[in-house]
Image (cartoon, rainbow, N blue to C red; front, side, top):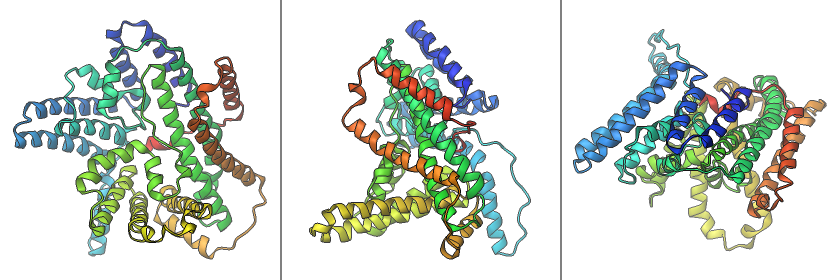
Length: 473
């Protein structure tokens, strides 16, 4: 069941009124039932995986707390949670990739590769809910929170349908109390929730789907095209990934808001960032927060030794790349992002502190250079994210460097460029609206008109809906 489907709209129309009609003690059952129905609509058997992860971490957290004074037992139960969850994730997501890597090594040694692969369908959202439930167990281990005693709250926390498939990745300390709290019907919550859902549908169905239809099937799969078209298609797809993923987050936040629950923001205008470190603090923020808290900081984080910090950054981004997919492209994408962060860290700590006294490095011109360099890095490294394989990446860069640049005569691509420019303008305007809190200053009688106009635009200008890109992760 996808967010941009009538099935999901029907689910919301049934769940939201029923949620407020039911007595408080029964609402948690409704959330659990709706969440499992939402997920099992894809493949019912995979609901068992969520249930397994939930029960595993429910009991492991209780055992960790019970044996909190016994370090060995405490650590044993944590390891059971980690290996149990990551074992499932590895089996479904990385087994075939591991076999490919092993076969490559056999090939290098002149041995015959293994003729073996698994024919499994990757469960949607497994990377997201695995990290969410693991974060809960680790927080109990670190004595940051106490274990959840109510199995109903744990079931709802792991499977909460608005953010189950593609986040935001929530912390137990933020979401669990909200699932247990009594929420009264609020006109403001309903109004804000509907507006946020419509805003997400607009970004997905009017911008992301249209640009994807232009760039990916007709252009990017054919990396032997002229460089002008390749550059433009890469720019299109850069907008697609933001509009598509942030649209999912908007709909997730809006859906939860209808139930009185506040989810974490996942984006903070990343395409206005002026350095790569700032970009990652604004992009997919809940994943960045999770990786920073449970991987980067335990590794040592920012160390006094530059080489150690560099290793930590590259390894962390390598994991983020691997988290996105079992593919060499994603691995290299993550490593390159790590290298970019290392270069920025070196610049910030070793060079910039010596030259920042010069007025040029405080000027508008320098800020614009920094901005365009950041966006160039993100877009150029993004080729590894979108290309099918390393051969496609090779062909792409070969044609960019040595191909014949041609003009664009097709109105289709001019139309696509207009969409890209519009997206960046919306990005900027939306930031200014948030900074000045203008949405809350709109008279209540104008908000229905704005929502009607958004609905009209979505209906008139949307095309055949496509699946959200992050469903595959």
